[in-house]
Image (cartoon, rainbow over all chains, first blue to last red; front, side):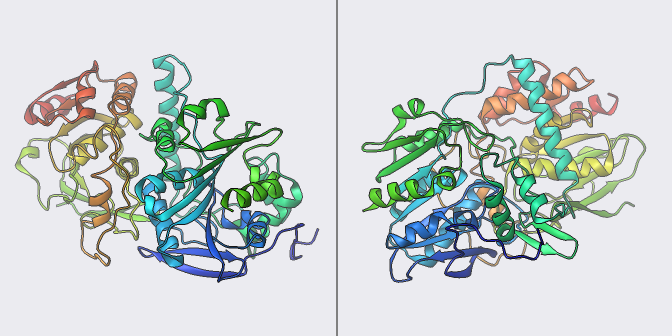
Length: 303
Length: 217
């Protein structure tokens, strides 16, 4: 297929408005769907995604009467590539976007890392959230697999050594160019359940067309996975303390980008009135695989 | 006399200062939180037989002050690794935050860190063993002089779990040629350092003794 062709996807609609917010000097790309005078609803994407992955889901929410606002996390999509990346910096960037919309409490929907970020924001700044929808972004409270200490130390060495090697090579690194089909096929390793047609569409949103081909816009200094002092249990304990209405969704088919969390293990951590809706035959990208059902649940929950 | 070298770590330029020439394994000094490298050789290191270098961490001294923060101790481990890429195998002395980073890089690059000495200094404790209540930190805009206020705000809140620190120590012990690759001269005892001292392969030692030990190791 020719590479300069505009790629469309059924139901996908680019945002009605785009703008930029400065988060402590880092330019964050912000997108809006729906009537500007409608009530705001904030959408947070997952790691290695970008707001354009909501191009089918967000218009469904906008059609339900919401001003849907999303943004590209720093280093992702059209937001600025930052020198530093951290969980807390992502939270601050989110707050800058919230501030650009309203200082009132708003409902938020977060997928994957975006859901976990919003869970932390609900704890750090409870006055900014009116309700939380978390789509497959609730980490499993299970501790590490039961492996021998010696083996765990070796795994950690390999992981840290790999990360340090990556950092040494990251100055001046560029993403590999390719055709729309090349990039769609590469992304299918992260998104094995999503159709080639959808991934082709995402290339035209999340990649740029250079002279030598398409390149994903995401900062090449970002690396999947990683290590650090954080424990999932610390995140999930926050769920129990949530003071706003909460709706969780879990895709039950495990896949690489997901956290493998199952409903039973979340049960003890659910806040009063909180509930988790499981989706059979669905992977981590619940809102992409089943946008109409997820949007209907969200609209009903917020009504 | 030696000079300052500029290293690249991702989008950041780091200043690596030469404080003393010499033959043999370099000594690398890592400063504490909010500090910068000493401008001349401190007396404590005059007897080190090899060259002595000091690294300004990201946001400190003559290194880049990035926009919008996002500091982690692991990022600073990457800073230290950029110095290792330049200098080869080194012995490290870290103060405060630099002591924690020295432990991380001793575990992360056990074949290139031949001895790490952990000393008191600013930022030794970080944010404690578990996360503090989350808080959306704000700093005054427009800081142009080091240290970066984001570094001060974020690296005093980062959790440093004892078992996480212990894992880095075990890595250093397991893959270093030295029986005792980490020596502690710090008097302070944050949870992470207590845990490190409880592991085999580490002990306390006054700074001169620790330097003398690694000078011949």
